[in-house]
Image (cartoon, rainbow, N blue to C red; front, top):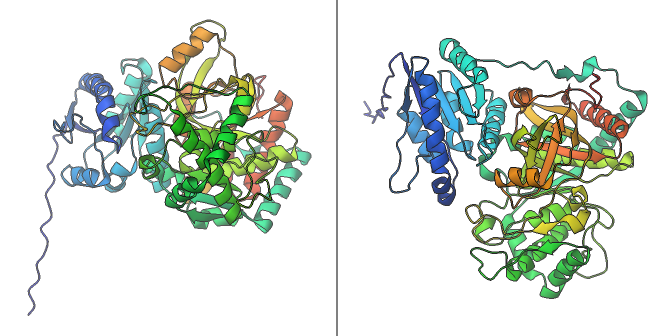
Length: 554
């Protein structure tokens, strides 16, 4: 009789009935985890006090690491090891005040049997809200039950009541009466016909989404499986960032200098300095301009209708940031680039929609938006932003709650006050971008916008859409918001019509929110409805969130 070596499974420790586990998921980059740890430590202390006030004890599921000088889970392997040792039935809080890589903890959360709560501090200091929303979207895609809470100091009534509910019942739900299924809304005939025609065209003629390496920064929610994407008529061309690096290095200096010269002639300002470690340098800008040319040429090679560059892992160790490239690609008014033989202007008169951080949900949204707005003769330039933070306007200029939509790249200068003249480029923060590279920074112009998000739930594509406005704030208030977040990045002061702060957080299933301008409020309403009709015709479950500008429902 054969003798087999039966593996011995580790026995996780059991928690007491009054104890609650806490984990802190972090970045993959050591520099970011070290820099952000003090804010996380402060957040955990006040959160633990709030739990203690309810008669429970917080137990950290993994220790502070003296050698690394932080207490975050910083890899998928580490996350799996942590979950092997914890009580799988215990209530678990994922406390986040920073950007986090969801895949570090996703394996453990998928198999965890106890109630799960994601908790974020309402602060713009680091992208904790962004990280939490990404994890929420990833858990939603994975089909994991969870609850979510957020607070500035974890002492407000909104938070305390819901925390008590979660501790007692294992779940907490939020009010989402602002969400209406599209099937309950009567679509105007013109917008319905346009949306359906554009959907039919996309499904018959098909489009190619160029993916320069998938799965950026652990964003499980940002990957659309082929079996969900293909029925919409969109197919992935899986490209390698090593090919982008190679093509970048083949571009002649004179071509790259011509791109920079074009930008500067339009009024773009580069904020340079002597130290590559601390400043934006001419060498970094040259390489970014080369990458811009290379991206267009590779996209043309493969017939791509939109592209996404991952950048962060891999390319970040070879080239300066891709953000200047991304925003420039998203504008119809951009430096011309010829084919390698010089005979053709690539994508002449058009943007090449780019989705930051290879967020494929934003990529599909961007492609749809570009086609809808082109057909309606509305501005086709569109972008995603991080749903970074929000606050009341302390200058008293605007009565509404004003969101800080902020992203490291992808914003076209057409969105800025002054266009290219209102754009500048500053060195990316060294904590995230070792080799530097400039951003495409500016203040988004006042106007009417459509916001949206495609997400995955119940193994199907869904889309939320809403209306909003971009407001102009005084210089001091804008600067306050920049300094409270990341001042090198482009900013949008956004008001979401009929959607409060807490309603947005309760419903939104992603770290990113997609935006596009229309020339008037009426045109924006119609563009929203046409895109909703297109999405529904492509098989998505569509919801309209909030109200119109005047407060009227749909």
